Image (cartoon, rainbow, N blue to C red; front, side, top):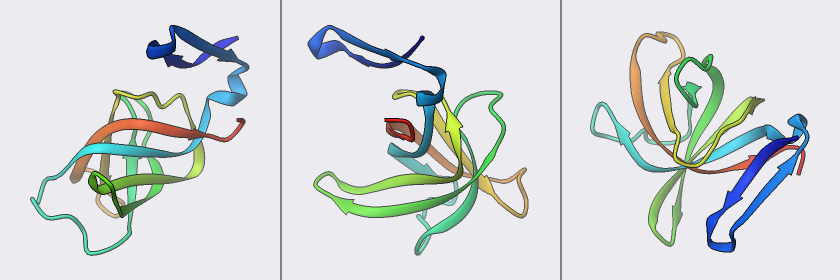
Length: 113
């Protein structure tokens, strides 16, 4: 069994099988762009959800929410174990050595839920 979610306000921990750690998307907060300007629309990127995690192909999308502009990374293939509080960094797909920006993972959408 693996820890899938920690809900401190309820003093609860959710556990389950490893397969439920897979996520197709993550919501980001505190997103910053190296250029200082967000892209004009959805952007194909390489994204890394934690240190030493391999980059994954993803679509970075923005949407207007109650808190202003919110961003989401939609991965081509599910990624294992994104967790709130971890950093997500996104890179140029054609030149992966170029960092475009990053943010803090707020939540993820599990594929096995």
